[in-house]
Length: 202
Image 1 (cartoon, rainbow, N blue to C red):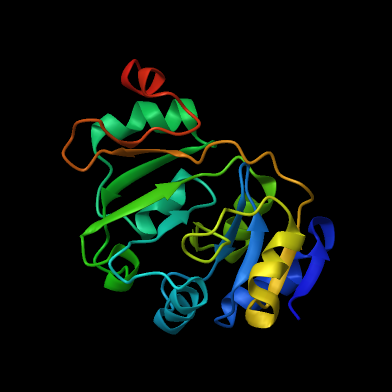
Image 2 (cartoon, one colour):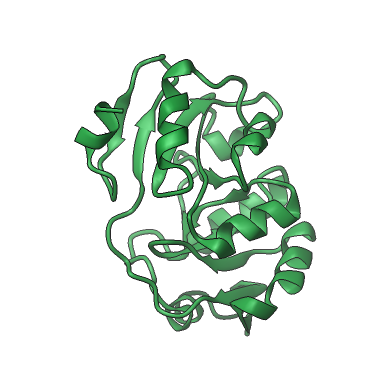
C-alpha cells in the first residue's frame, strides 16, 4: 500500500519519493494531484502508465513561485505578467513556450507547457522544497472523477503510489482556468474556477 501521511508530517517522505523517481499524491485547492519530477522521463512514463493516460495529452506543472518558471519556459510573454500578479497563487494555469530542457513527453511534443502556482500550501511547499516544478495532473485514472479525499486516491491506485499526502477533504469545485499566452494574446483554453471575464478584464 502507499504510505498515507498527514500533511504536517509528510514532506520528508514525499521529497525523497519524488527525488527518487517516485509518484506522490498531494492536495491542491481543488482536487488531489499526482507529483513526479518532470525532468525524470522514467518517472513521467510511470505516471502515464498509472493513469492510463494517452501520450498525446501534455502534463501541466506546478511551480513553487514565479521565479521557478525559468526552469520550464523559454519566455514569459508580456500578456502573462498581469495575470501572474493578480491570480497567482491560485487556480489559473498559463500556457507558455516550453524550455528546450523540458522532456517532450511532458509537452506531448507541442513546444508549450501549462504552469501555475497553486494556493495549496502542500503543493507549493512540495515544489519549493524540491526546488523544482512538479506535475499537476489530477490523481485519478483517465476518465474517472478527480478525487477529493486521500481515501479515494488510495482506492484508485493502491500501492501504485509511493506517498499520499493526506490533506483531508477538498472542496472539489471546478478545475483551474487555462489561458494560452504563447501568441502574446490571451486565449481561453478552459474556463474553470476563475471566470473568463475576470481574465479578459485584467
